[in-house]
Image (cartoon, rainbow, N blue to C red):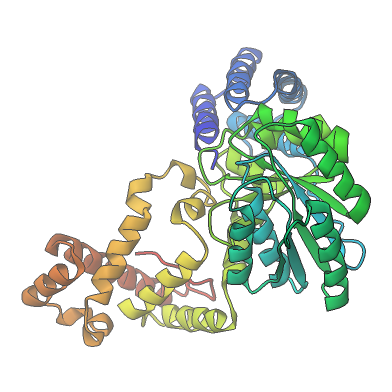
Length: 441
């Protein structure tokens, strides 16, 4: 997510650091580059100009705080202005029983998948949602939503013969109320572009269902086009918030950076992958930090907590205790890798670490993680628990069994031993206190 603009921002700050002193000339030069970065991210010209003006005014009109370098001062100003531009975080109103959430969007925006993801997220938070498959204009949209709902264990109302979207939605509302559901999520029709028929259908649904939330799902890759779509839907049906889908790619970020300023409505969630759990609450401060390459540790912790069930929490505690005693084995690292994968794609997790977006992705790819896992799984239980028994013939057997090379097996064992020695030194020095589990070899 946001690799291009993040890389440009980090380059800008690095060049400022080499200047040493923050003068009017260096601020002007940095502001020009900042403007180019925003425009490349497809931020609206008027928004970019206003943003850069505010940054310049604050950077030159305030003293550098004690303990900050000029580079850090400029970074803080940009960070504060970005957070202000993104606005306060928003939430679904979810009023009424059942609360009705209408999901709108154009075809290809990821609306149907997002509807299922949102239902899953609400279910994990203790609500009882049901879905209504009212997108009858796209072939297979109903089947797609019904399949996703079934995989999540959530009810989904599908059309009967000859039933219109309005009739289906009205029936789904009655059935949800009678069945004790507290939330009805309605997946509405999409079009390749905005037209009169689409808006008429949306207005009829809003009038009949009186939703507490009308959420517009937008493709996060589209930049200013997303803002234009948001304006059209907002005028016709009164959008209350946005979900940016497909943000797991190198989205330019223009939509997220402009929507609140252009519409006054908040971004509520961002879609970060194809899996049912890949939907995150939008955190303006965390998003600003990711744009600047500073990571999003709060978001990373949230992912870890969401992925960890009671059994996982107990396993994490066992791992932490063994780490403090420097008694970890390769079996322990294997269990931690599985826990890490439940949190989502590794590339997405890395960019949530400070500076993680700049790390080489090939060194921390899913393929690399799979090779490590294959090597450990090709070992016997004794070898995983006591890697010191691994002689040449055993390592050759493990390499053949895992489809890797002896050199890769040797590298893994060496890194594991180094990590274990480091933990022993930390334990002896008293520096290794209670801490979160990690995968670090």
